[in-house]
Length: 276
Image (tube, rainbow, N blue to C red; front, side):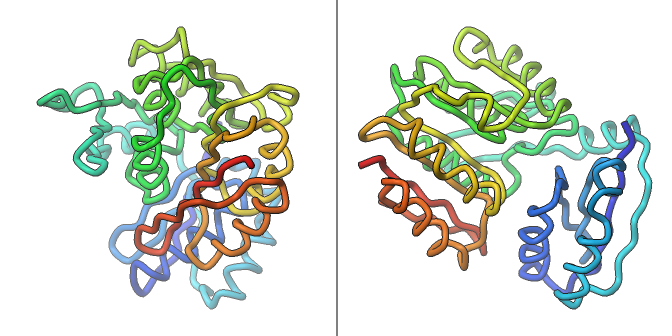
């Protein structure tokens, strides 16, 4: 499967964050900012279906300079894995690759081989949800991780005592990578990976839902979240900018999900809501 790297020059981190949020409305799978260039990665076939819309959005944002570069999948994987560094979340969680030094002093750790999947912990949204999850009592509870990527959040939940977690991602490679990481962390008995979207778990009931996905998909899934969460159930949502918080909160309230907490990191936000 061939991938394309979209390169967009940016003036600063703020512009990179804003463009990342806007590009997240399209099927881009990963983002990286280095040397004042935002790099966004997408499957070649997916880009063919939305390239004109992407270009129009970038033009509207004033990002008129851009370049699309075809990338061989094998070269992409090698570069991504070699550049993956450990991530500390609030000094309570270490997300690392197998070749990194293990956590010390009983710190919770998750082993991740990222491959092509989103969710290594480097992005602010993953850190935000992971931090909120560390403060949530999930012992003995049943959860859903929608847009699971590498499976990192599902694994954190399982290691903190969740009875079971359905890890759902629409991308085939993300699903395969999630299964690999779940096995490496020894939680295959509690984390159940599946390829699909929110419709794949229709009719199931959950005590908590983790949804680190883009704003538009999140809003579209809100009715399903309201249905699948039982009374007192918790919803942790991220993947959107701080400016989108009022929109997300309003959509949650419309489904009987009352926002109870907002966390921010840089320009990104996480909203925790509770089923009334």
